[in-house]
Length: 261
Image 1 (cartoon, helix red, strand yellow):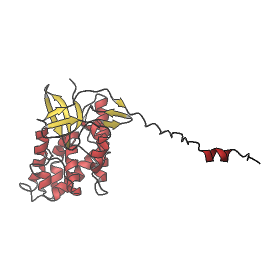
Image 2 (cartoon, rainbow, N blue to C red):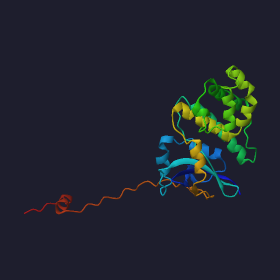
Image 3 (cartoon, one colour):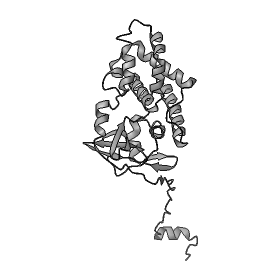
Image 4 (spheres, one colour):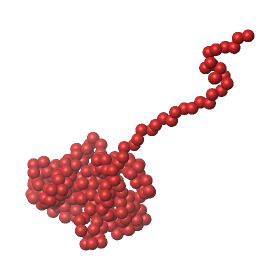
């Protein structure tokens, strides 16, 4: 059975898959996490609740947003942090780059190609740039347990501040570049790194590892393939004609003839 991806909202152990507008349709299921990301990236984080309420009128959106994929091993659900636009001018370029890599991954999935991204000049430059920033100064939000960054990837960055702290930053990064490329050509790992970094710079809270893992054990509903619903444009409101009741005075005004004695 094919694995599909969903934007969820939930609380108190219950989650619900949401309808999301895409190119004039309402979709609930997406073929890949990159396909879902390309839609949610364009939704401002602070506006997400009100925006999505319009397309999910029967759902109370007062819980937490998260992404989910289903089914794994027939019944298992996996969960992820969603990507909304929480950027300022300081971080917009990172989201724009991630969007480009999401478009590549989405294309590859749709055309039956491998999931891993090709490490071309653009991706290689992006990996080096972000890694250099992370390696310059230890940050517990990025490298601590609750960070969404993969544990093995965090270990590579952490070693810079423990076993190899006498190496120069660029020297250390280049010595680990092959490993970094191996991990970050995986789109899911790349997106988690970008989400964490943007959250750090913008001081904007995101769902943490413990919570994300917990959501996978919730009762998650609505995760089945649905036929997309076409969004019909709103019909213009027709103005009702105004009818006035004729009075005696109005009748007399309309009759130019006057009675003569």
